[in-house]
Length: 341
Image (cartoon, rainbow, N blue to C red; front, side):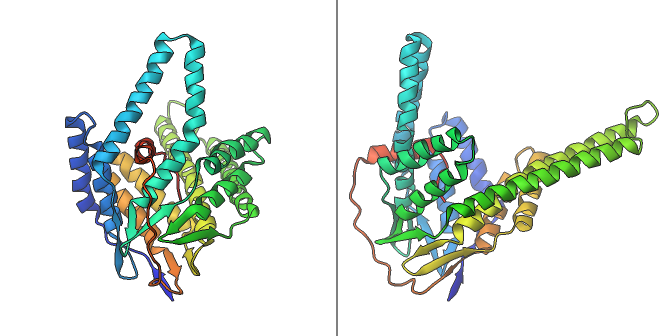
């Protein structure tokens, strides 16, 4: 049975939350940002529905605030060492921070998963520091030393690390993606960028040929041509991002399985591209005030095109969570690296 996700959010409703979050964050010199994060995530989780039930976000703003305070303290210490300590000391601390990134990443993934719930059952993430080090340090290094040719394989390994460690209750997810899927993703983006670049070059040349060059008597036309070309270039660069996102969603979400239930998506380049381009233009024209509607529109589109081919969504059972260094997980949430599926 195919069950589609539904999103019930409203741009005007989220706008009010967004404005209050910004104002209170400014008035409290950033302290309210932890509550703003929880309010925003709670709104989007609470308006996401699957099979008649909505999701919950369980994050504690006090816990997030403690993690952010410690993270800011560490960053200030690092800046102080760079300013007053010998260069070797600052470089050593920077290297240690770089080596600690995998630990921060896996703690953030663990925190965000455990703070998510559906039908009273929490999600979880069972990854460890060693796995994150391979996925986010060693494999990207492999991509660099192979002059970029190994980077799609590094993304494949990162995806495997994520999906083999995510779970819902006591059931772990798996991914059926292959390395070739990520190479095809890269080729799709590269092909679009190449074709678009050639088209823009020919378009620019044709405008020169038909008389849109600089001169006193057609200055108006020159300005118009410049604005037209600038707009086309802007849309082109936005579409490169949209092509990547659409191909990524299609590659990842059409290959997820959990306890015999398969996830699927029909996100398309044209559909996602129209949302991304129109959102970007409207956010620019409104000096950012359209952002809440843009976020809701994007979420609505993704949810409408995401489903579960369900065998049984009622047999999942909870798994006891063992608290292990919760402050470390709060530090991971503080950096909010945006890594996940």
